[in-house]
Image (tube, rainbow, N blue to C red; front, top):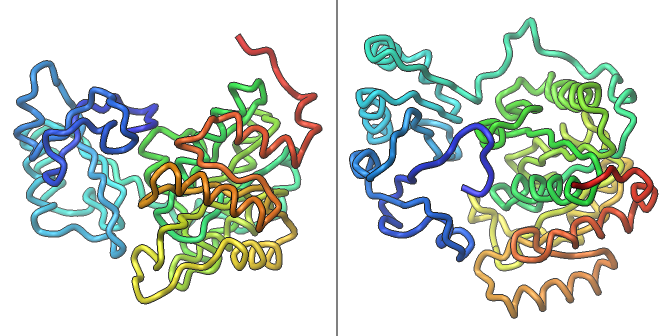
Length: 336
């Protein structure tokens, strides 16, 4: 809803929030994208001519429920292409392949990794990416790392600093991310090499001053370990950490307590030769006064800049980076 280069979103199917505006649900600011109960309601909207159905769910097991399959088959029967970020590949399913052929629509399984022959081991080529590399990591999964990374890149670009985003998850790729890989779908032996390759490709194609790498999971997470590969493969000089102060337990693992920013920062800086230059807040479950207090508290406790990328001015993200790397000020390009 917030950022999509690949598609123009016309409607959202979500029976729990039907009748509302998608922007109001996300940020309290209307964006004119209606939320409806089901696909039939979406297709019946006046002026909506859609050609693609994006499956936007992300269950931990990566598998479709029977009702999901039915909804997707109905979408194809209505002449819609399918985009899915699940681990279960629709293109390999005989029923879906047959319907796609009959309806003359296509299926894109975003999480499908490259063929084994095209996977790469880490080879040290990251040394060629001669620019500042910032990884946006977090204290949990589904905590806003991709959103913060996207907003950080835009803020730097608006400030005249050439920045590029490297996506490591399916949602960023669905949104139209030019550089990136579905990291958690790649065999572990090749993960750091895949990250390295994506970062090097971004550098050699664009020659930016800054490459921002989207994080996955958390380094401390007992199940989602992709942060380790991101740190090893991209070898960032800096990390921005995303945290949700009101979240008491890990999102998919309610029996595991959330780590603190302090403990996560210590772990990151012990694991890799990098430094955490700022903390960004996910304000879920917090009102504005609580968010303001949390920002002040963490700045005092951690002695680094703290902000909320979504609800606070984008300039604070730029200041966070320039405070750590003032030399970037001399690499500004003209801004129209």
